[in-house]
Length: 148
Image (cartoon, rainbow, N blue to C red; front, side, top):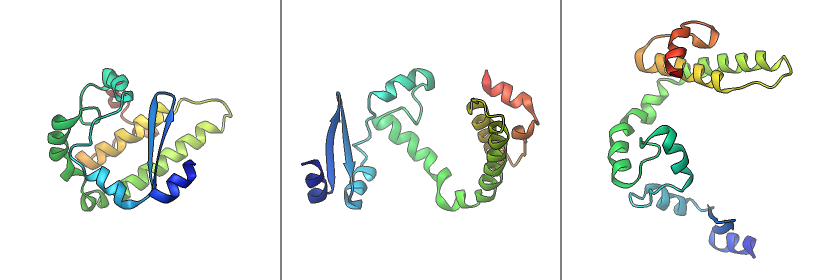
C-alpha cells in the first residue's frame, strides 16, 4: 500500500512511533517545501539541542529564523563558496589523513576533536585568511579556547 501511494503521488507519509515521517520524491513537492517562508517550524528534536546551542539560526523558528537567515544567506552564496573550494579540499585531505592515521591503531577513536580542528582550520582560513594548522598540531591554544 505504501509503495503504491509513493509511486502514484510521489510522496509518502508514515509514522515511526509518535513521529510522522514524510518522504517527497518529486522535485516540485520539494521546491514548495524548501521555498516556503511559513513551513519553517522545527521538530521536537531541535528542542533537545537548543538547550545546548541556544536559539540561534539552526534552532530558531518562524520570524526569528527568517530574519537571521536573510542576514547570513549572502555569505553562503554559491559564487562565494566556490572561491573557498581549494581550502575545503586541502583541509579535507588533512582531515582524512589524520583520521586514517588514528584508525591505524585499530582502536575506537573519538572523531569530535578531529572534526573540531578541521572546522577551525577551515573557518580561520576562509574568514580571516589565516592558516592555523590545528589539525597537524599547530596553534593548540585556539582549540583550547573553542573547548571552553
